[in-house]
Length: 325
Image (cartoon, rainbow, N blue to C red):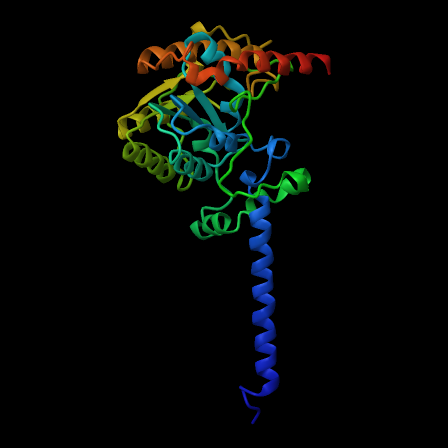
């Protein structure tokens, strides 16, 4: 009978262990490199939410979380110019609500805003995996989540201090898009008594976000950005119900006619997202609502916020560069 613990078997076992250890070590090293906070200025512009971690601690009066509906609709620089409160749009394209929860948990360790706005489209995005084990793997080995950042690696830009989040976004999370591509179905908010069910475990993630905000003493508000593609009245009804269950405010900008959106002009992709022209209108309405409803402070003229006073010039530079392309 062949011995289980023969020298050959022990050698094979040790070789397997060594192989696994080297693999884990390589993944760990890659994860160290591929997390967005490891890069300097030009390396993380496609991961705009992480710019919030570079902002001075406790300087945000409001934070907006969500997917691309958020970063296309809300301009913090415009809100600063019109009202003087500070805001950041911590959102990314096709963001799952589980990732939103991670952003909320991480960023509220550094910021103490008066109010957090959760844009509701991400609540309806069905996650490819509801497996908490996979989520934990992504947290432990971020290379699985941020593997595409290899395209932006600049060896000179790798940060030696893992806690030094140095890249700041001059638009504070907003994405400037001036393309015009009209919507083919502007009459999308037809009344109904139906409710659109939220998929999977998404409601639990929303509950977790609420709990995090409550523990931090931050007010949570649900907000729906205008979209003729992604929004409808059945979803509106469900968000009204959810807001009542949580005991939070909810504002649906799809129903605010006074915004004055023109879906022939104010969208970049046939009604999926608003463009710059639509965002200007949405932000004007939303800024008024936020400033008045939550009595957000006006920091204009405060030397501590001198960097914000210079953002308008940078904002105009972005617009000028875009128009010359």
